Length: 161
Image (cartoon, rainbow, N blue to C red; front, top):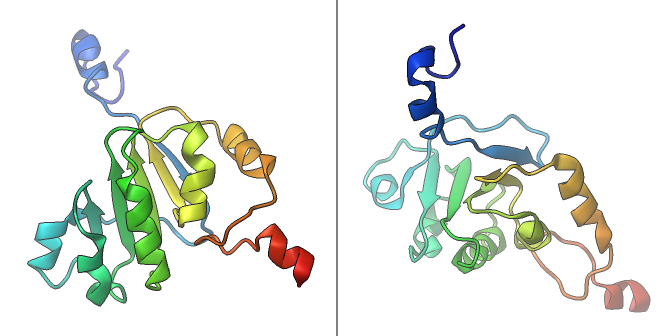
């Protein structure tokens, strides 16, 4: 019996470890953007791309003049402890980006609440994330204390109108 994805069982062990499995969790109701994201440098050098990938250390503000043509911005999280992607997301959402904002890479369950608060609406995790556990984590703390990109009203605003 042939295995997928390589259809060659003799090579299964070798290819199994080279396949990158990604858990994709969406919080959007529109269709997923399928065009592959290009690097920031490649994006800035062309006029027809609608998807871009930002690596840690790249300045998200370089995309601000092009937000109206972008449908997907993928922000890389190569290590869970690298928080620069949160700032990039906040900058893009505060500038008015309404397209798909995807956190990609070493995204863990305990980061989900903060990622959503910063404006990410798609998670592409290198880890197996259970959608029920993600939803449970998001529901665990319904009250927030600060304004953020997710537009949840802070408790003080609810209390004081």
